Image (cartoon, rainbow, N blue to C red; front, top):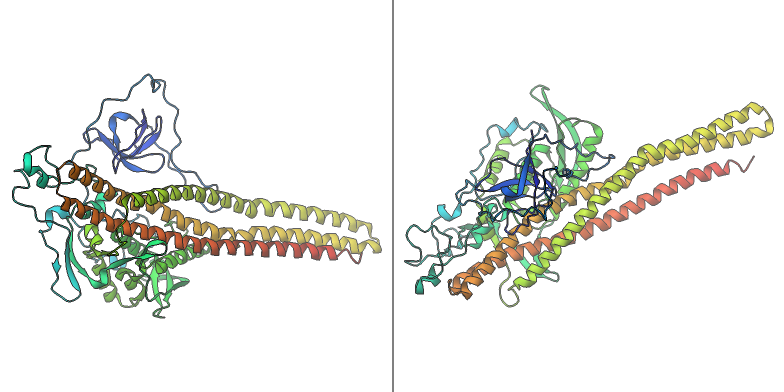
Length: 599
């Protein structure tokens, strides 16, 4: 039985990790057990986070599972429909909200730093076999603030390998006895207050800002070795911060999906042939290999939008239409991977593209190396190199304005993409079923008329009977053209929309990381103004926020760049196919018309 709750009052989130509620809104609960007055759940807009338990009432009725969306079927808008309020509810004006509630507990067993990606569960491509049996997954990064020693910025030992740290050595007496690190002392304290104050940690340890390692990085708790090959460079371009271009761009085709078997035919799977242009050597990969790669990249790059893979499917995996649709989705995915300056050069992606399909040992070694990558979580942000010198310092108010503008843009684009997908899906369904049926109904009527005329048996009417019969065949053929047309024009548009809806789903978390960093900067500035923090510490927090802001703006610029490229190309293809379609229809009608010339 699914756990649900109905909001009794409006609640507006004020901290990262919280979600807003609307009165009478129905939510899905992750658990009915509250943590010191807070519950975790998902609202009707799909946002997941914490909210006050006293603001909702648990509903114990079972929740209906929404059917999965299907091509050429009505696309559900999503979410639960709000239920009418029960009679026991009082209007909001008569029933005041409860008293102020405490913040989420700091002692709750929160998840460790690291990506928020969770591998999808399903029966697609038999995840229990092959190299998954013996693979070793690296431990998730732990709390960097407690497990890493204090390092100073210094050169590493080996050439091309540098030890970087954002930690600062606290002065003696900077922390009181038993005072936990990362939490500010109470106001006051005389001259020692300035050196002891720090920016507080987020109370909500579920937030993306915390889980990605962004908080630990901004607060100066990241330290590790960064190799030259791990550096991700942001440069200043004509549109602002941009990822440094890949000096060796390449493409990769995905062709010839073939059904293969193993264990003497007991298990079947589909393998896709990949041919990267920079090697020219083909490799074969299953969907589970794509899924593994996506999981590693989504965990490693918290401020980069890793394109989503086509959805899993438990049944019908070997049907021709499904295989063709998945191949096209994977082709779009691969194009976006190769087009991204950072993702295209990632070691895990290059291993995926170049490791020979027959070398199982080499594949496992590369896989384990990727899973043991230390440059994840807070350490990932150490790998980002940003411009220095004049003009390199970002105006944080301007950055905040740009990010807010992009946030509004993505929300509007997501809404319009959902609407267009619904419209295209419905229109395609009508063409495949309704339009084909209607045109063929007209053709059948013309055919009946010609058969009636044939009863006349007059020689001079034979030409007319044949022309009408040909018209009937033309309309029948036009019906088939309508049924086949969505494959040519609407399907590619919906495939592109699906890919971009995945990108749009990624950006709230990316923006959340940048917003969290900005919040820490504002807090540190306030401490400096109140004389509770040294200016040097606040400047360090701002510099690290600057790095996250550069990376976020670079990712936003890349998104707009490929968006213009993709939608230009796809709209041109759509209109070209529409023109060809109506030319075919016109040709059929003209052929039918000429049959009457000799009557």
